[in-house]
Image (cartoon, rainbow over all chains, first blue to last red; front, side, top):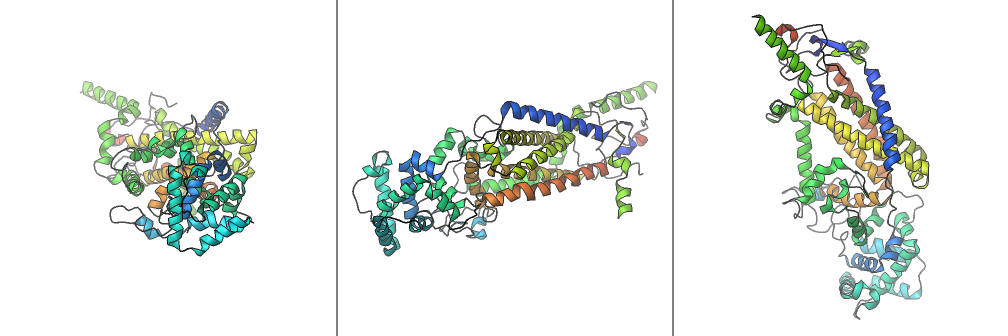
Length: 324
Length: 208
């Protein structure tokens, strides 16, 4: 075996004095220790499991927020309606990194029509009383501009109503919107809307995109999350509900959302993702980056790690000096 | 091919009975602890996968197995981060070990993705909130169009099949590279033969 590797940055480990070592023994001890530690941590701290919010529980707990969200979905003013790719073609909605628009480039691959998908189709699919069928027909017959005017007027009236209560909304020209949203609220409270949005006419389903988008458009989910310190300005998804460590390893990612210029940027997500890709590449390429690869030598933490080696070396040098 | 493999990694190198004496620090334990905790993560995750994603919500035993999975992941990530920082301060990429460093970093990034997708398939409030938040980041750079964090079925496949497979392969590769290249010597260490300080005596500082 070669004794040294000239020019490779370090001598051959085989050239150094050795000590007995049993990798399997060390690994077995480590495995037992980790297993015991895991058993103990799980027994003492358990794991969080807070029930998911359903459309039914949302509609029952905060009917006003549900109705306001349904009206916004109808009028195309909700977060999802104006999101852009991959859900729809909203102009100028996509985020960019400087001139680069990766969101736009990926295209609309999960198309969502908020009025049709969240309100009209669920009502159309369900046997409805005559008043609702009439409202659906009136909605379908109206031009898009009229539909949006009705929904916007109703959204504005709900925003001004005490507590957002639809019963206290001022009278106005809202077309069929109040009838549609009131019926959707009934459907949601019964639990039927959960099944309808998830299944969409299928039997098996594993895709929760529609109900989660609808839920995220309301303020109810966020209110619950903020109470559990899960908001974006509360370090967001690195936290876990309750007093659990959560995804601490996402700390560097969520950190950027807390500071300027990202905090107030409309392109914060794209900019932070771009930055994280750069930082990850930097970490990956540390051995090749001049300056960065020298940091270990400057910090001298290695003197602690190999302190016995350096001590022996220094002792040997002193011994040679005293001999000479 | 077999001859080449055995020549590169003879049994003595793969499962050594001796190591360089400079390997005398507790910090070396964290690499082994990382692999050990990965095995606990895979075993507990395997039980959860066998019983299905709803089991742990309705069974006391299931809840405990899920807790084992959670805490073994927390330990895995902790051990891995300490291991990574240690290897950074040891400049462990020296001596043609850059690929060992690179595979280690990719392991770390893959582990983050695997743990993240695990949070998405818990089927609880955390999953809902994390999916809603994460979609914005992923959509902003075009990834969300293909990797839909709100599609439970897709995320389950990533979490229990694709990412663990990749992580397993990367880990095996990383470990083989460590065995192949050997443990990196201390910074500024010279070949003992050149320095005239070679000795067969082991270091007085014992390794735990």
